[in-house]
Image 1 (cartoon, rainbow, N blue to C red):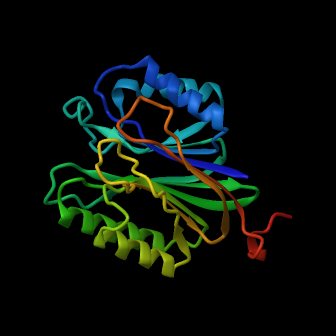
Image 2 (image 1 turned 90 degrees about the horizontal axis):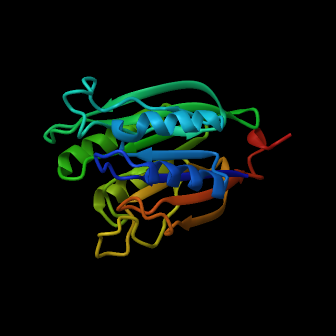
Length: 240
């Protein structure tokens, strides 16, 4: 069983021991194998990563700006945190104009039960429809070249009924990458019961369980958690 979660932890621009410990408790309570975060800032990054290292979790993900002192308040990263062996890692810069905030797509290739799996994590623009369209197009282009089983998560700032998201979802489905819908709001301030945080999994896996976690009060988002296993119909990735 593989447990995957995605969580926009909200950049509060302050140091918070409570937030750090809540993230660690979340990992421990649900025995999370892969945790993809959005809005991880310099304010809590070093302390969180030190504590993750102590429990043998590896993390990777570059910041959106390369001059952290100047952009400290708005500089964030989308790390992939995992206890699996990491084979390869890369951060892609996504097109961001006409918006002013840079956006990234983080990638890790990890070894799960002897098989290479590509994990992606992102946080796309929240204002510009054109920027959203360009970012989704770039993500789709990158993933389309990937031959490994895929796990894609992130804060897409798009509800599942938005035309841009529906088009993106359908194109991924054509490639055997399925969206697991959460029929509840993931951004707490939304007046609609629709998620903007999403998880996609390639059909190399079967979904066992999915849930929205509501007991963690450190963010304006709720984390999504899923449990998956290798598909019994896929002999190539069946566990020996």
